[in-house]
Image (tube, rainbow, N blue to C red; front, side, top):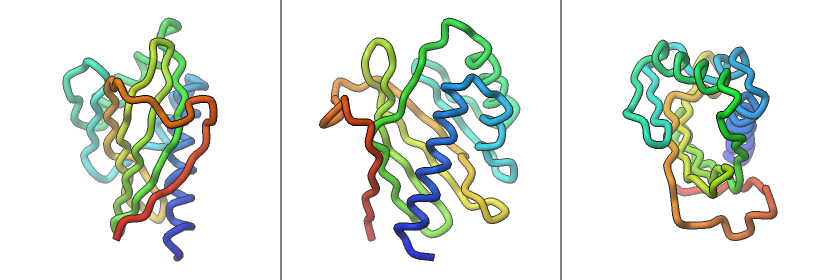
Length: 139
């Protein structure tokens, strides 16, 4: 499969992750995360979470909390490394921006998230009014 097509598939799953967050949909969030490898998650300001149970428990709490902020993904860039992919993007939150890294792997023929980490940044996207997605290839 062509690299651009694989990048588009990864970006689509990345978008599914942010859509699950925006919709507060725990079942959709659960579908995005890997099941056959150990997963990890670092929410802004939290200690690292290891293991699917701990990660999904954190999402259950976040998604059920009406005061959790809305988050929107901007300028996602995917890079493919064989059966692993990395997406780096900005997250727009009510108080500013975060920068996030999402790592995906192939699991039963589908891209699945196995690590998410987001944290504050003083950097701003080049054009925060334009929620475009792009890709960047390294080789």
